[in-house]
View (tube, rainbow, N blue to C red):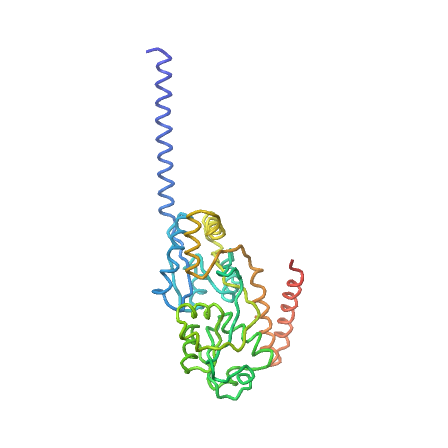
Length: 333
């Protein structure tokens, strides 16, 4: 055998060997992706999993494909449940409203990576107080504290149904709802709205998102409601990820959210339909500073609570935090 033929056969063998190595590497990469630790994505759903999962599942399936790992949904009935699960590492990502998001961020468990934008392009919403249409109850009547009205509020950790009315409505007037109303009942937004419409509650605090959904899903109930107060704009909810999530997965998840439904293609059109079913139009980049308006409300509430028992140390701490947040707001572009 000539040296040339031996050399040619050597090259062929080397080529086959290289191809086998490449195929093995690809197979290992595929197996790594297939066996990547699942990502559990938590979602608060007042309506329950049966209603929420069909709306969220297309987005989560697309997310799984983008990050190369299965994405499992976890639906919670309360903010406290989801906060605890995220802090305990039982979930790796979550959609949360601002106040529980702040709690998770401050614990060091997670970071904010994106915020939602609604279908009209708004990245904020408002707290709203409603009463039954034609009842004759206006805001002055409600705030007169006649101890004869039944009030519906939301989860104690809710931004729009607990924090906002205290920061913007009751707190500045020195009103404690527990002593102002005949009763105060906690419930989810749809339940409270329905209770006002049928007369088992006199007034309730919901939000503009709930009312918009109600007008589409149950216009007969929506027609029975009258708005008598609304708050300043509140930051929309956001997506948080655990700090200890694999950095590569975290970056893929962030990129997925910020590009989802963007561009001009059949795929982008389909993704926009998925977002529209959730009443979103897109996700935008966000960090912890996005939640500062809610931190300011918390500081206002803390200050009001500290003034009642005359807690000087707590009052000074709240005033310092409030000054810091307001100064930061003034230098924002």
